[in-house]
Amino acid sequence: MGRHAQSPADETELSLVGGALCLDFVNTVDPRHGRAHTEYLTDYTSLVSWAAHVGAINPVEAGALQAEARRRSQEAARVHRDAIALREHAYEIFHAVVHGHPLPSASVRFFNDHHARASTRRQVVVRDGALEWVWTEDRNLERILWPVLGSMADLLTGPVDRVRECPGDGTCSWLFLDTTKNGSRKWCEMKTCGNRAKARRHYLRSAPHRPGRHRTSDVASTVGRNVLSH
Image (cartoon, rainbow, N blue to C red):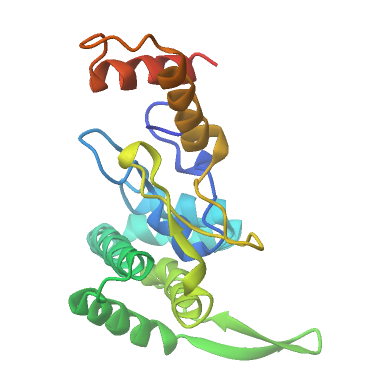
């Protein structure tokens, strides 16, 4: 269920539907479940490109981190592994919240450990007569994860009850913040998962209902072709 036809995956064109930085971070694998999926964070370079794409860092910071990663390739690889681990632990936490399950203690510990380290690199400064938070140590390769950790802390202690998990095709599981007044948003994107579900309902209503006529896999395959052809 790739969002884009480009190959290989281009993290700078990934849809940003989460409504919070940490949710868009979790949504960097598409779909989350299923045998075939697209990984958008394939290395540290793609991680920096994604962070610039979502506005977590500016182009100057991105260039500095890319240059530093080339100098310290082993450390960059370690930070990339940490990023993927953080993404998966974040999904486990938000999945538990969405479905009312007990919070996974290992994932909470992982988040707390990394957030505690990141917090020591954050301080308030005066800019143009106003106070604002900034991240220090611009060339620290872990700096790429600090805004994600900050966003996650804000959401978990804020409107976390508004987080939803997309049910698209039973495999999507992209996360998003439902900001509708009545909490009625169901899909990550109407143009992808929403339209596929709509097309599937239309097909099932209009198809001849004869015993043995259609297997579930036949229906899914036909609907997928119909959606992709539009």
